Image 1 (tube, rainbow, N blue to C red):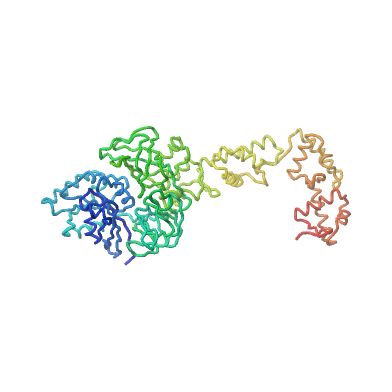
Image 2 (cartoon, rainbow, N blue to C red):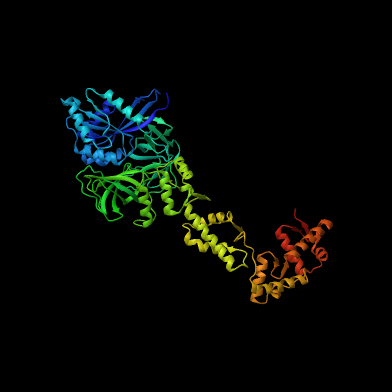
Length: 638
């Protein structure tokens, strides 16, 4: 027998259709925990139960099912939404005697907007009707055209126990066929309950999604960005070392207080506990809004309308802004910006619900396309195209990467889709298949990068043509030229790396084509002959730079000879032709090798030069690591 498989079942259905009674019959736990719920005989807030079932296959692996009981009353739909944000399977409860009711329809649409595709229909109070087949057929008709139209309908009477075994079997069968809760390496727990048992400190509960948390690790509470240590984990009242995806989880955070009233610090329902780093909250999200064609009585969503944004267990006041000042009617979809009154913590691919400001209707739902849009990107053409691309096909890591690169051209490789629901393996596989360039930790759009490198290369070649005397183009000059063509200044280093691997060479702070051989233009060649002749006449006692370069042309020519290495400048008063410099170096090496450590005077005599040349020459050799000074002596450096 293997480890239990963890799943979450969420109830749905109209008030007084027997959800809580059914959960108690299945699990032995009364999910109504509040005194007011006991007094009024109705569910007001979320309740929880636990059920273990054998897996329908022959593996013997148990199914550990956390069951969330939600309110059915219209006044508490906000609490219902907080409970079903991360369920795997719905247990949709419809009373046989009442049939399909208004909250049945609203709950159905909420589950549809949240992407819940698997359900079992529990037809409760089966003992109260004479024709259960008629009741079942009525419910099936109400579900026609919905995501649950093929869901099994199980008549059940929780009080006397009829149908409970069949319901358990149906739940096990649907869960077994459902995808396992995804582990994308991005753990999140959306807090749906906060309390403080005496002597324990703050405890929060929620459903674990996206990854696992470990006892003792550092966690972050979003959207505030508070860090704390995770002291303890429980699941269904049992201590655990890990909180796994699909597990109803209680976390002990004794360092964190409870935020309520005017207290700004601490934690409350709607916050998110995560181990993801470098991901921030945002007060703006760009989304694809979807409106069901099953009417609810709510009017069209207007541009700039105030709404309630439900994500996970959070309920945030917001305003919806369409990119084209439109309204959204039943059966339509549109791209929009949701401006939140307070920050929300979301990932690309998350689902959400919009309800009206007065809390009477569920307006629509949808998916988050961009959880943290670039500043001032609302209605910007590049952002609109990016969002339209994402909305045009089913979401995938490859689609996101291609769309992001089309918009941004370059992305730090370590941050690609960090704020998304995609796993690192999905991202890696998509990067390998999409064929884009990766350079020095940057992911680059292939066509754009080829164009940018072409522009930079052409600029270097142009400088070679206009100034053949220059040994290359100064990197700072090229940086300034490319500044407006690079979305991030840090890309310049990657550009130079690319160029030096494709026909260009870097030397110090210069870059040139490998085919470029610096040469003086015709009008400076006479100055070159004059300077070289002067340096040749007395190789180790040449004229000073001031004597060599008396005109502007001679100054330009002398600079060219030094930059191209044809002449070696020892200091501001001494210059040698490169060929004579090399001969002097060989003589000095030979002298020290034969005579041993030598004084400057000894070396001067061996060379036949003066101190004006010898001293700067020896200091130059010291800097080059050829010789080394020890007091008054020079030795060869090993």
